[in-house]
Image (spheres, one colour):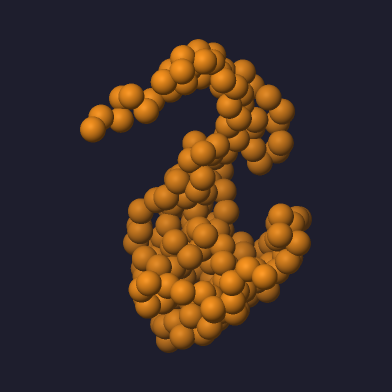
Length: 192
């Protein structure tokens, strides 16, 4: 079966508010079945990176930080935005150094995912950096407050089960390096 009868035709597009890290765009598209023209929201962004950084003694360099959307602290891989004119690899190396103080190592590209294709057109690139070394103190941005933590794969599994490691992009990157759960995954602390 072809995807052709699922595709919407773009009629027009208009820029909306500039939200600093996101640019609002409104697209008017023709519904493939009904023919109605509907307005849809797109949040444009540069590409993002996530880094699975592993020390020579096989510990993952992780960051714990407060996330405004969920009003809580999370455990995540280092990551961030690709600056204009920067390659994803250079952005990954910069973000790892800034957020954790770690760097160098042997780098591999783990592929990319679409963070939320319902309204984001960008990619999140995943990298593996093995044998990273602590080069100095982290250099967080003005809007960041980060604690660096080192975790074994078993400790990462426990953080997942506790619910403190739930960031989908961090889990996507980590799952390309470690077997973090048995399949099928069952979370014993369901919604209450």
